[in-house]
Amino acid sequence: MSQEPVMSESLYIGECPVCHHGRQVVRKLRGKEGFIIRCEECESEWASPAMASDASAAVLGRYDSDRLANRDDLKGHSWVEYVVNWDEL
Ligand SMILES: [Zn+2]
Image (tube, rainbow, N blue to C red; front, side, top):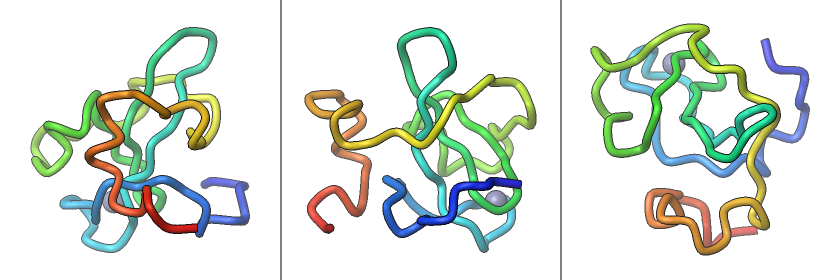
């Protein structure tokens, strides 16, 4: 489970269709460019926001993500339009 305490700062795109409990947060991939979506509760993962509303497209443990993506990471990225709390904070 995540050891990152300040979940309110997570950039997220919606509610998880698998567990219906966690938020789907944007995470930065380790050691390379790019991001994934991961549920902060059940850890379901998606390769992109476009497929993240589909529970059957979720995978577990496929991606080696590094940390929560922040605003600097995502600035100008096409995923910004999916982030529901982009204008908050
Ligand atoms: Zn979930």
